[in-house]
Length: 194
Image (tube, rainbow, N blue to C red; front, side, top):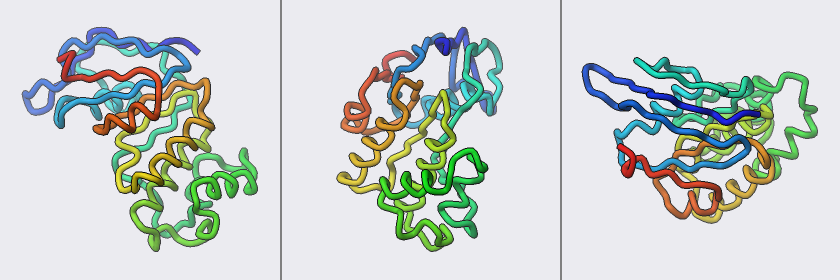
């Protein structure tokens, strides 16, 4: 894996510049937590890195092919079970028993076969996280991934992520300093850069 490099990345929406000439390097295999005030461009930065949005100018290089992304919205198929939602990204590459072990770690084993439309917000969040982790990405992008989780469960979920993505690149947007500290790695505050 190579380091992800942004060179002179800029992006505007409706004439409002969100990112201006951003140059950054994310070390391969490292965890980076990105903070900053609302509207500063955290989500835009993640989407550009993932290739979901093109910059107006500048370039992003050395982004791994296999990306797991947890968006601010859960983006689950509501009529599908937790197991089936994960199978959407893993196919048959990950055995059912392994998926169920992931769900058990996230305290969802008893609900694994229920449609996620019946889940609470926190349960849906954990399914979205398990889906991204089970995709076995080289780059895991997390956009405010722990919202809706109580503090105790949040720490368990962070521990789960750390166990399963060791040695992989993780970019995590969070407003919570304690989450960033517990995730480990480097903390970048965009307020200090822009």
